[in-house]
Image (cartoon, rainbow, N blue to C red; front, side):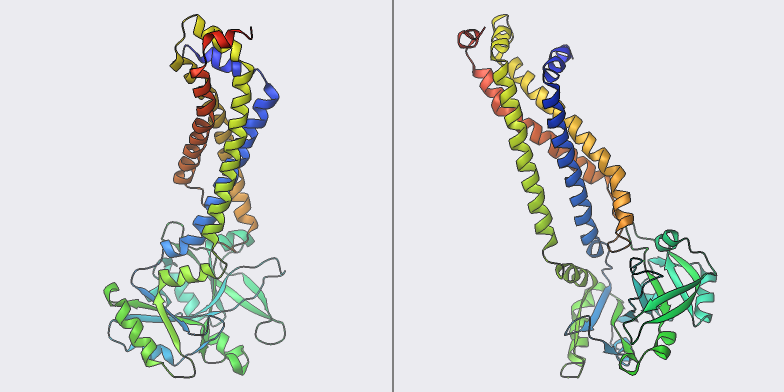
Length: 383
């Protein structure tokens, strides 16, 4: 602490340069935090996937449906505890920008398989009795200001000419898993099946299976795909985590893209900060020579340079992460449920600050070593 005054005096020697360098750190740390949050959001589906669940889809892809008759045949396979089915609905509320995920569900089996979605029993009972009933995630309900008993119009054009479907909001669900999805909107399959054109009747988008034992996943998956081999709708069965990973890959290699951007950002930051510290040391060669002449050790000179670089990194890093704390919730709201909730976790904050300090240390190391090795007589020639 006795060198604090000297360190800060040198830092504020060039105020504009200091502000720009701190700003570079702040921008880099903000980008790092946002990219890390997006990466986490894309991978969260795989992270929270149930180990005892399988997903069965049409082998061609998700856009192709499966016969509803498959459900009972799948349920009869040894090792299958329960089966439910989902269908993509794909409507909008009032305006095209009001997009959120809507699924047609099998209410009789939904909670047997997807038990992380928690709906109060009285609300679920009302949903089961109401053919036009709907259940919505708490975040979507908060987004639109919906409450139990509201009449919700949803415009849909996937199943013929644009039609407005109206639903009664009977329930609001929470997700018991940290970071779990709370944005979905569910409607009943029977009501859906009664009102869609012939091509969509008696179909399911995909099946979700709950197993008695997760160790049976490979056997059960093979049995399902073998059962429907050479049929008009062959199947592909995989674990829920594998399905989530495969869905993410449809967007491209998001993880590689984000990591590449992060590396480029921090490499650029390293060059900028290293150049700043090199210029700062070159401007103070004579002063550093005087410090050595009056008894400061080589290590003390190295410490001065590294301390300046680390203080810049610390202030800029905290500023950038603070900005991210404020901005991420706003950005998450603007995405309108297109991604799972954006969560800026303590782990991301700690990693970001650690990386900032590492960049600060590395960028100050070479100029610091040069100052440490500088001979007093050569430095004092500039006095």
